[in-house]
Length: 130
Image 1 (cartoon, rainbow, N blue to C red):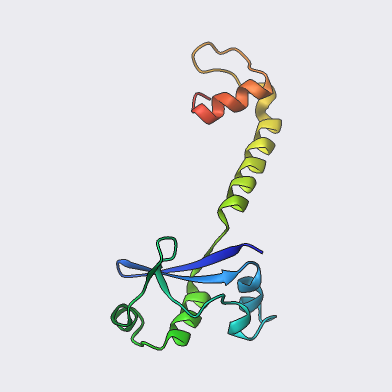
Image 2: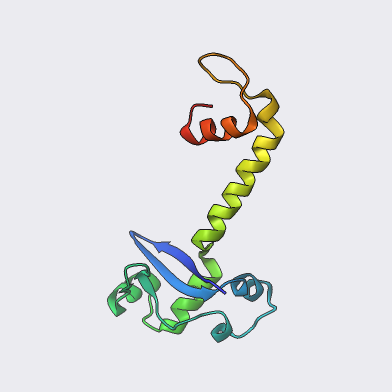
């Protein structure tokens, strides 16, 4: 399964925790009770993509504790879940395709007011012409 991030912003700093896909919603629903099943590593990141870890001072300032387990629990309980990049693009592509199948018969170009076929409509929509 691909890794996912749970992100929480406190002040000007954004904190991230790497989790397994699908486990956060199960944890929030109460299906999964053990936090170690949800979290991939016991590390709180400031920027996981660049590999920047949160310092103890940053954790103490933002969460009033430097206990990493308590901070991770707060981030998972309150933070928002970021989907894996690929699934986001697949969802967006599926949504755009669905919208185009509904509206493509009535789509027309702004300048000429000519109707465009579905494939041309999709290209024009991606370019921002439609």
